[in-house]
Image (cartoon, rainbow, N blue to C red; front, side):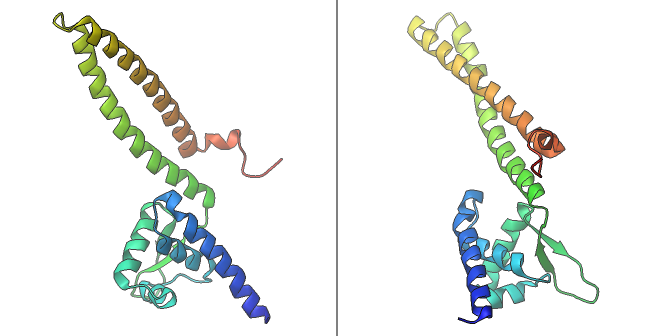
Length: 178
């Protein structure tokens, strides 16, 4: 086996692993292969170059790039004299991790918290209503307690995300081992 073939196989192995695990980020395997291609590229690539290399349609390529851009895993770069958009990976993997979890977690927390806050308001009104049966009132109080506990958890998650965004987390889990 030639040196170049070994090199290509090691790259393919890594790209396949990245593609397979991109579902953790809510991204398709094809976007994962694109990320792998950009990871190993020595220069920023255009959509056409990526399309030709991966054999994907331009629409699929554009969608994949947009997904990666939204998560700050890929960035558009400017090169003098180049009229087409060029893309490269964001080399700061730590910041990518922080951005990804901040974006995804905040969105999920906001959706869940909003529904729970609305439910709390309705439960409190139900509990206070003299027409509410005792059986319903007891169950509403249990639900109220569960939701309040969950909102405390979401408050903790917000503080955790804040520590990612401010990089305060690095005081507790430094990038480099000591």
